[in-house]
Amino acid sequence: MGLVTLAAFAFLLRPYRAIAEPDTQIGGGTDLTRTLKLDNKSAEWDAIVEKLSIQRQVQEEERKAAEIARKKAEAEAIAAKAKAVEAAQQKVTVPTVAPVQKAISGTKTAWMTAAGIPQAMWLYVDSIVTRESGWNPNAVNKSSGACGLGQQLPCGKWAGAWNDPIAALKAMTIYVDNRYGGWAGAVAFWNRMHWY
Image (tube, rainbow, N blue to C red; front, side, top):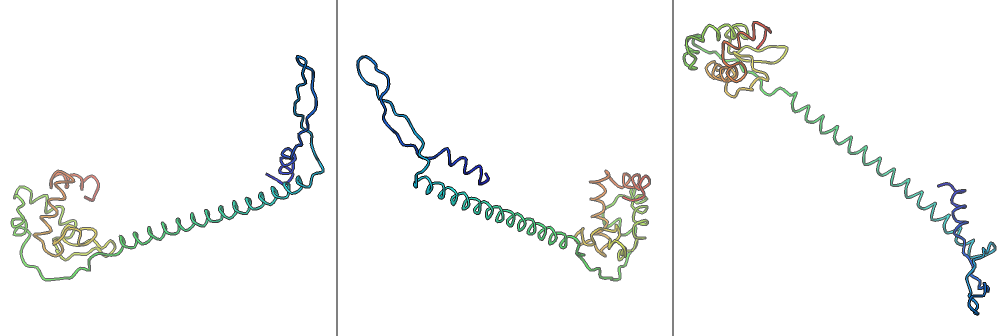
């Protein structure tokens, strides 16, 4: 509301002076009604207009201050959320395990037997593991950081499966059973997509 509108509004609220004037004769008596007349020269009116003007200025300043505080709070909330997201992303992207190379003995058939993989599945297991790591339990993909027989990503995702071929094969079996319905399904998917 601008000052012109405020002045017009204040004009309507000017105090009125009530004056009793005789009205028409009703039933032999006089009915007095109140007629309101505008008093434009009242000092009281000037004081009211001044008070309204000051109140309007105070309200406008309070509104501006509240708007500034609201925008500041919104900006701080956005900054805090961005900081939290950035911190969460840094936690996710930090490599979880630094692979340690160690000498491992045994053969792939001994490892599959120890992992409890049925001999009927060995051809499928061999197909996947040969493509993933060449049966090297210490294999590490330098570009992605995947590691182990099944190239787990992130490295260390399958607890105990890094450079332990039996643990790796057990973890891989659980993974392919859940995702592809078994080793044969994983190989079929690989043949279609060239990854599993």
